[in-house]
Length: 565
Image (cartoon, rainbow, N blue to C red; front, side, top):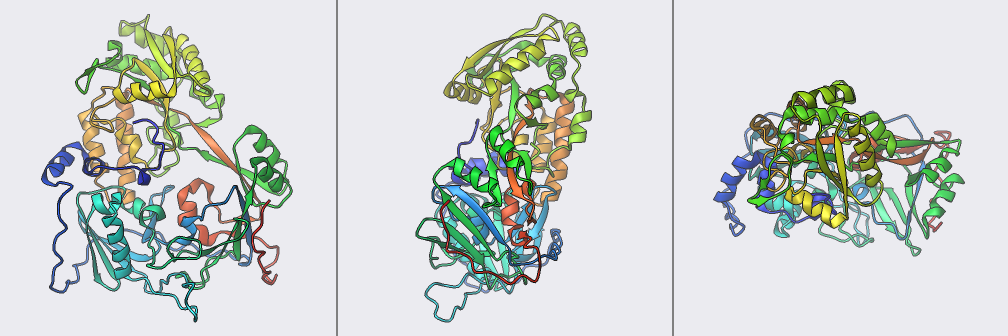
């Protein structure tokens, strides 16, 4: 339940998992009871498919304007060791979703309809082509139509991949330009996952020169003898005039410190910053800037309300059942102090990485749970009869969370609360958190990859059927169930914000804490690079990246065949 060590698309998922994600606990149980993993695929209909009636169109974001910049720039990147092929730059998907505003962006599909709650139809771009085959003598590229997409999705389904074996029930190429997906249950992350190249990047039935199937993304990868990569524009890319870059070079470096020196010397355009020293050194480069964003590593202070969870007796504190006590603990926390402890940013139940689904920073700042008022906290505790509240706070043995736990205990003491630290190793913390066996617990999740997790952590059934906090709010559960059934990301985001406001007003048993940040340094000459868009920056915006060459009249220069730093 804690920190997923792998991204969701690399983890095993049961049928129960997807149903819980899609329609909530009650509908999930019903549908799971009606299906089994051994269900056979239906026999294909021998009669010609009829064109489905048009349904409500899901709104697509307008195509962004192409900046008036030189299109022959070279973007220079590097990695320690042999760089992996950036599949987000070499594959296309049907659509992508921008987490900043929940808008759907077209890719291989130019039109999306939802005829009913379980059906989504995509109209394909008629100009999409795969990258040229290495064996092709005339440089011709194969076209991508609905049949190609259905073929690749069927391969994924046969391989047991989560999205197409557990979420999608039927894949139909209605005609060459119309693809229809029939779902087993409403699934709010459908379009997000269809926009993930690892989950749904459409692959040709032919290999590329870098050992992966051919794609149709904006760039074609070429591996060099030293392990470095060059990515060149796809000449048949379906967006006219794109991508803007002449090439992307990804050099191979032996050590992390080599990358810092290369960036400082102007040999790299973008550098991940993993330490305060690297941030300081990068900021010394006059023609570069430092960007930051949430690391998506959600943190929380969990309170255990009940002594039995999942039929097991566990530790808890009865005082936490009183909303006044939970509110007192919340307003005892100085969130600005917590954020400054290790450079974190404010976060609600859904973290700021999913800006469309998350509550706005201004909303969080004005909510009474995010105020710092130890005097009012003490008054609430006295009114609840718990002015001498003492409980055990379980926390990680290692930094930085150990120091954060110590800071939290000092802040709580200002309101008269005594939190006795119980420092444990990572394995013990995970076990206790998963079983809900604690009085209070401080934890951090691995980078969260989807906004639904921030909602599901608070539902009555938690992530696995039992809430680790013992918290239950049926009204909130109903709100989350509606959110997780919304196919339209914009509708989902609106519902998610409303559900979070409801949750905070009820004072949850898990209090979200500020999330640590991550940073990059980027040359001022690089444009179109939206660091705060996370994966969408590569999936949906890479064709608009550009490097200012100083003059639009500068002729293209040959790209060197890779290199090591």
